[in-house]
Image (tube, rainbow, N blue to C red):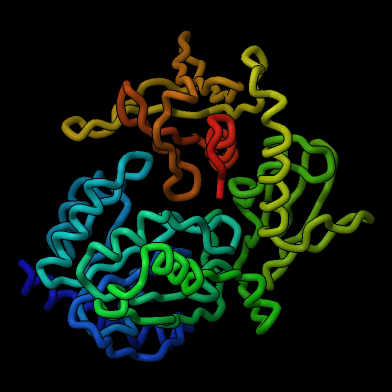
Length: 393
């Protein structure tokens, strides 16, 4: 199938280049790799990153993709037939993904992976696992690092709308096999983190651009969950360009440059989503240790949440729909006359896919949590990590 994949890839790439350059306002410089066989590592910000990564590079690549796209029936079967992506099961071990990447590279095929594994909620490149450097060292292939600028403001993870604004792709560095052999694992990791670091607001400060859409603030409450004025959880709401707290009345506008403006007499406490996000993370680090022993009253909760069990042979099976609550020692869903509870220490892996769908692994199986309406899954992910003694990066 490699010949077919190569031909299909080349055809689609040639077809989309004019569109992305003209209508997508995408700028890049074509790049000819020194390495015959390579792994591309990139930052991750948009739903179409694989197109942005493919255009500057002339050779066919296999992409690492979230496992949820393999559970969509005919659509998934067609995707596997046409491009054969490498599955990454979020909220579970990555061992199988690493094995498949190594196998493809050993066969002389090129692979592209978003090193963060998750799109940024705040506009800054997120945590990259040190295990990525180990994969690079063991791959036997060259390494190309790719940074995408403008992607976050054009297609924020928390929004359902794509903005009109410029986006730029940049090949940052290429490391040949010989060069990688002379580097330690720590040096490779430092190079990856440095090359892939992008801060959307630093980019805006250097070269401001408008990113326009009809409803710029809608669904921002999936990323920002803590009011900086009254410190209430889950009281933030959005409509059109407005972002407000229904508890204390704080009202802001998110402008076309991605900055907050106050719509009341009180100035905005934070000018950017990134600064707000850093503050709410800091608040949780200070707030949660005092409440770790709180097993009677939930730290926060959301209604209309559906828990499902994911099984390879049966697909997704609904378990319960009701109120999701986080306590100092457990996460539980109550409704339909029953309660399903998970001890925090029994949750081995937990991740977010798309905007607000949580995937996690326990001894009982592999589960999905999804809301009937928008809610912040991010506050559960951060809190779970902090409550079990892990840092959230």
